[in-house]
Length: 490
Image (cartoon, rainbow, N blue to C red; front, side):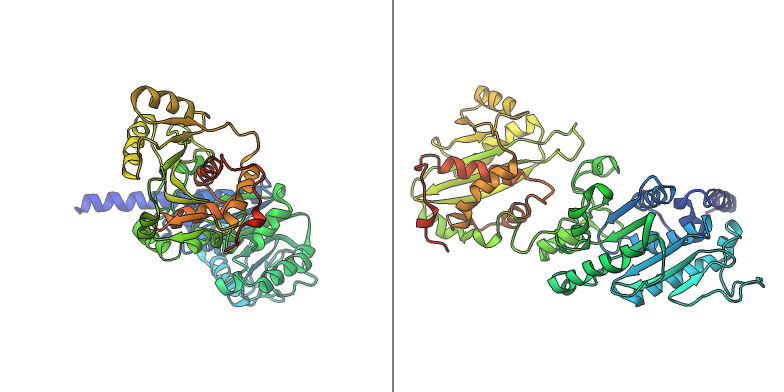
């Protein structure tokens, strides 16, 4: 770099610092870069900061932020937001809590260091603490690792561990940063009940009509504190969910990410995330994607499905036809929660049992999907007797019409459902529970089971649809008075 280039760079950095200092008192996202010049904010950090500011401004009353571990949520919310808020209003009373008092106290120390800094005092001179430099009026105000008061004002920050007391402490803003430490606490019904009781008998009793709550969590369990609160009062909360791997195009309008992109690739690469997912799929779904499931499953339990090796299946099958079930959903131009991938499932019935041979989810638009289907069917034991079952909904109607024109596939329209998806899945679930649905072992098994057993809490549900189609179709010729009680339960 030449001296001219170096001088230009220095001037640009100086101008950036001047702008950050100018904007920091009014915009929390700018404050993050101002008080820490080394801070490198990603798009999701700015998004979280802006949501926090909405909470302070009164646009949001209660906010939950769900993010994967080690992605910077505590730096923003637990270490910096209280300092910025007290700079804006030194009379606010804030409680910051975490799973232990030690961690909560660490956050308190960080906040105090920020308030003491010359950068902070340059923009918020009216907010300072006992022991601050060149101040003579600070005596008599509390300041330790657990609590500090703003000098000359009514505000304070108090650190408390989950389970700790707050007697006599009115709260304007309550912050909870991960109320559980690890899996052993998260999976303990006793500990979850303890956290729930503390929230209801300690924390919420210190709130008033104008109080705000801010939770940042990595989801561990469907029945964790956030899960219980959202079940009891979903209408009272704004929820910001940012998964480690993008599940919807542009994160439903929050980002420029594409499906499958990592959230923070230079720090947590996609390869690293996928390896983590492979090691522990269920835990990854909860911790990294924020989709916790009930142990064993929700409507359908994992151990209801029976497993069979490929060799066993091939030796068992004689000439029973393999049938295929397609749920068409994906539309590249459509952005939103309903934009699931298309799902296809291969299954056959041998005597009274159903064997799921393969299941795949694919993001393919119409031309690619039409080319893909004959190839998939051919590669998965499809024959002249095989049927491709497609529900005639949305673009499914077009797929049916075009396949009949351009291919020799035996295309069948599934009946248009009249009940909602959850009701339909509960109807077919006894077939799975009684041990009549087998899964042929393959690399697709975990993705399939994770989604089906998480439903209705799962992000996508294409496997739920095609599984329901398959069970209904393959048992279609059975007597309507089928008696599940006569079956052997495995």
